[in-house]
Length: 310
Image (cartoon, rainbow, N blue to C red; front, side, top):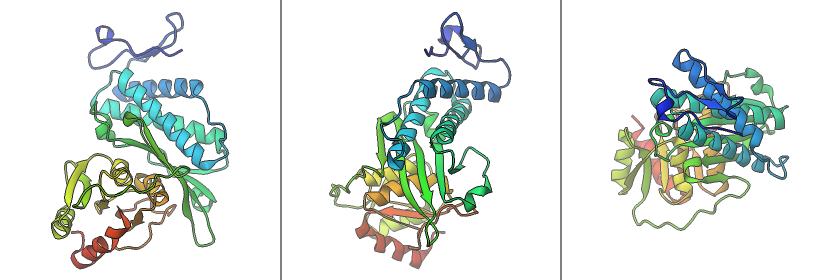
């Protein structure tokens, strides 16, 4: 049984007195520095959620497992956000820790022979020789997550498998917990008909790149500001935008799951110069990408070749 963190009248200054369990066996968060308390609260939430969450009928299916795991991490994040009493950086840290803890446990239990590459864990280079690697971002959009009631943050779970030609993404899921939505490769969304006469490009709400603004001017596109990378890619899947073009630096976990879902939906996915996106590389950076409706790909790539991204 899970009890919420203490209400405001029980909170110490700057911290909630987080606790779980019945009144008789309630365990209270330790006093100490904020990092210690955030980690403890996050771990307690992860353990409780894992213990009470049902599994899908067939966990052997990688598509179903990815969607289920992303959903479970999303549930933990909603709990942290609603019940921890944390704010700002402490909320970000607790969310990251809780979602990472749960996904690590689920992967260890249900995919024990697979390697893992996560934003929130040490990079084990043994993955480079593995035939199956899960690439995860437990919380994509920590800033947005820490600003309730914003809903433009996500959980990413993707599977990369080795092939004769190198490797490819074979399964993936992106959960948007605050919206109650999960997109996955097992039941991919068909690209809906365009509902806007002008192309729409998803951009950062705080720092839209100059080259994307120039691209929008050339093709008469509208800029649509929003939060995390996963949310931007899903906006193209959902017909909220028609393209997401990024060249400001990302890592494999930032876009592996979104790209897997977008490809399954029939969208164009590539580097900004049109070359393939390659995952499970030694260097975890993957600095640029395009996700767009197929009919816009040539225009965008041509613009980048002529003008660059500086």
